[in-house]
Length: 380
Image (cartoon, rainbow, N blue to C red):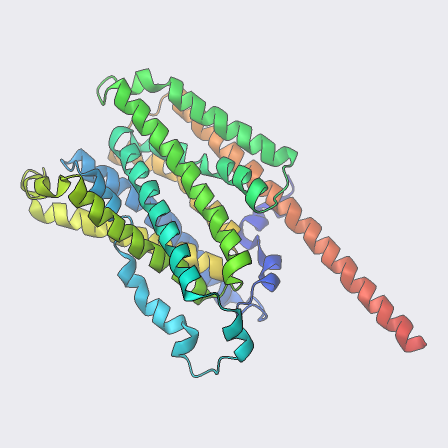
C-alpha cells in the first residue's frame, strides 16, 4: 500500500462531489473545510462509541427493557430539527425553479419510502439491543464490523458495485473474524449469560449489521432513483423522518410487549439511582444523535462511503474502551478477531482508494482529450 493510501482515509470521495448537487462543492477545500471534516469525524467516532458504551451501561446497572434501549436509538431526532429548518430550500429567500419542483418525487412516494425505512430501522435497532443485552461490548462491536462485508454484497446487487480481490479479501477476513467470536462463546460465558442467550445475541448483532447494510444500500438507491438530489436537506430528511417512524414503532412495541409496566420498577431498582437511570437514557439518545450529526456532516462534506468507513473505525475503539470501563476479557482469540477486522477494514478502503485513483486518471485523460479537440477546432 502506498503512502497516498493513508491520505485517502481523509480525502476519499472528493471526486464524487461533482455528481452530487451540493451548493458548496465547487469551492476550493481550504483549512475551514478540513476543520469541519475533522470535527465531524470526532462527532461520529466519539458519539457512536459513547452510545454503545452507555447502552451496555443501561443493561449492566439493572435496565432490562429491550424496547426502551431501542427507543433511545432514534428518539433524539428532534435535536436535528433546527438543522432541517436552516438547510431547507423553502426556508431561504432563494427562488425555487420550476424544474427543481418538477423533479421532486410525490408526497405519497416519500411517505412510503420514509415509513418503510423507519420500520426497517425499528427492527434493526431492536436486534442491536438484543446484541448489547447478551454480548460483551467488545464482542458486540467487533461483530458490527461485519457491516462492511454485508455492504459489499448488497452494493454488488443493488448499487452495481464490482467485486475485486481486495473487496473479496475484506469479506473473507470479516467473516473469519465473526466466526472466531462465535466459537469463542464458551470462554466468554463463564460468568455472564447462558450459551443460548449468547447465540441469540450473536445472531441478532450479525442480523442487525446485515439489515443496516441493506438500509444503506437502499438509501443510496433511493437517492439515485427516487429523490434524485443529495443536498444536505435531503440527507436530513432521510435521517429525521425515518427516525420519527422508528420512534413511533418503538412506542407501539413498548406497549404491545407490556414492558412499559415494568419501567417504573426498573427505574426504582436501577443500581445507580433514578437520576442516573434517566441521565443514562437521555445521554444515550443524545450521543446517538451526535453520531448522526457526524455521519450527516461527512455525507455532506465528503461522501456517504467515507461516512460509513469512519463509522466502522469504532470497531477497534470500543473493545479497548470496554476493557477499561467494563473489564471485558481481551483474550488471544478476541485480539486476533480484532486484528482481522482491522485488516478487513483496511483492505476494503484500500480498494476504494484504488477506484478513486482510477477515476481521477480517467477524468484527467478526458479533460486532456477535450482540450486537444478544442485545439484542433481552433486551428481549423
